[in-house]
Amino acid sequence: MEKVIEGIYFIPGRDEMIPDSHVYILGDAHSHDLSMVDVGLIGRGDEKLDHIERTGIGLKDIKRIILTHTHFDHIGCIKEMVKGLPDVEIWVHQIEGDYLERGDERIIHGNEMFAGFIRGQYGVSDGFYQLSVHRKLGEADVLEIGGLRWEVLHIPGHSAGGIGLYNAKNKVLIPGDTVYADYNIGRFDLYSADGSQLRRSLERLAQLDAEVLLPGHNRILKEGAGESIKKTLAQWKQYLG
Ligand SMILES: [Zn+2]
Ligand SMILES: [Zn+2]
Image (cartoon, rainbow, N blue to C red; front, side, top):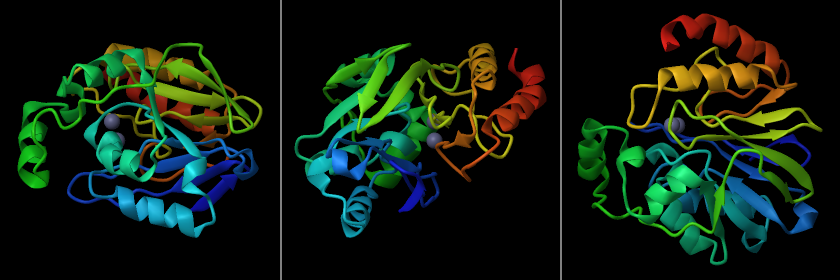
């Protein structure tokens, strides 16, 4: 687990045939009020919890899982996490929270081909991800958690209820899969995705005063996030409608 800055830790995903999302742990360790952002691929929960414990963080201090969105590579091991973190809450945007609660897994799978692959490869049966959500997040919510202040940005386009978390004080942006650090963007062909919404979300992120970019996959940026997002938008906007 790498410390990005004080109060923000990074556990890199370890991709298989399907990617495994990065996990971020937010909060001052002394606050006993930590948050886990995304959980990663199915089967990868216990090793992450072991890893967290070995760094000296008490698992009982992890109070909530915040999902940037509910694609399979981000929510996959949530049941392992809930088992290992008995009092943990699940926070997710209203739209995708409603999908989870009614057991509608179309956003999780993204398309029928992935759904078939996931069922076959991981033995996940329909209804596995029907979950109750403790807090449904929305645009402009402010989360004062673990000694840090995060603004919730609803940034649809990659999925309907995708969120970003922005900490203005430290200029940190966690954009999920909306934008990456290597001038790439999230797919916009999956169920509930929308290219023109993604363009508007990228335009919005490009306006933020951001230095640190902590995306769902690939490398992270410790400086230059704003410039990187602007360049990414310039490259991609013609394809986004
Ligand atoms: Zn995604
Ligand atoms: Zn992803």
